[in-house]
Length: 109
Image 1 (spheres, rainbow, N blue to C red):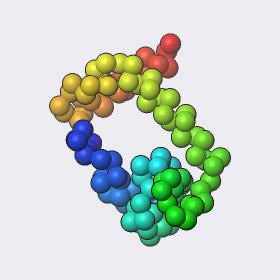
Image 2: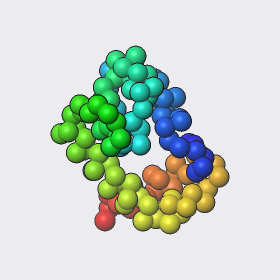
Image 3: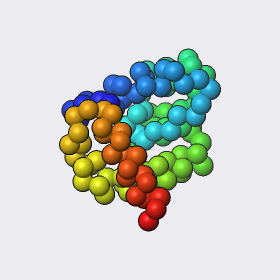
Image 4: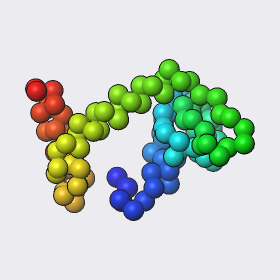
């Protein structure tokens, strides 16, 4: 877990380093040449649209990118639980426990 003041792009390369041969889906905030090169080095496909200020358009799989919306909705449901949205828990294992409880609550309702 990264701190709240840290941009995810700074830890994204570290988190995706162990993944090989996958499609990595991200929003425009993850668009950087360095991150794309890191993904390509591990035989991963970047499904990340280019930023609006890019001079050359970036090709990406738009059908796979649409699935990102489903993931965002799941995170939205998780954040309905105030304890998860504000990350009261300081310990990673306790925070993971509350995430599991929230998934159980979503599944049962």
